[in-house]
Length: 192
Image 1 (cartoon, rainbow, N blue to C red):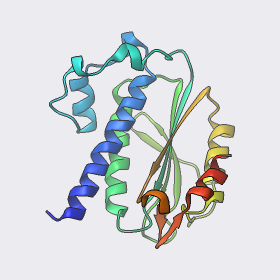
Image 2 (cartoon, rainbow, N blue to C red):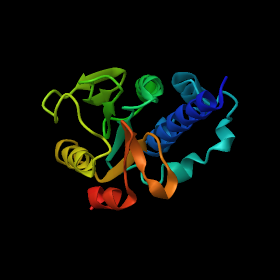
Image 3 (cartoon, rainbow, N blue to C red):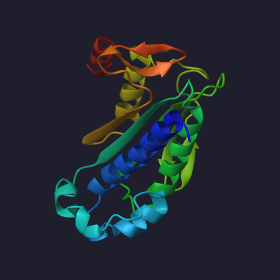
């Protein structure tokens, strides 16, 4: 396996782990499934023991409503990995996410006209046909701001977990789309 494939595989595992932890943070302590159930459902961390995760600390704010918003910029060589991670999100959400946790994914892969916004409800992916256009540039700060504002307006919650998924180049930028990246000042603009 090449270096690039190992790095992309690691990013897929990290995304699934972050989403699993974010979703666990939303659960009431009495409804938190054991880590082996989570691992089996998400296909990650098979050797992680329940004692390795401090559920009480994760669930301290469990009475808040949450939205987990995943912004997947894969209009580049990460398209297949983004599709696999989206499948992992679908596999991870039916494990006990309460009704007061929303999960939404904006996906853009390497094909033309493949930008899609979906609300994830259990194992079901519910497309939102009226969002944006069929092909959007996820490296543009206006697109990220549109996604954040749409999420806030349509899935209101007390807490928002924004996951930015895609290539990053440190201080030079992130969220590569056909060779273009969002700069850090542009990210700041999108988040304000």
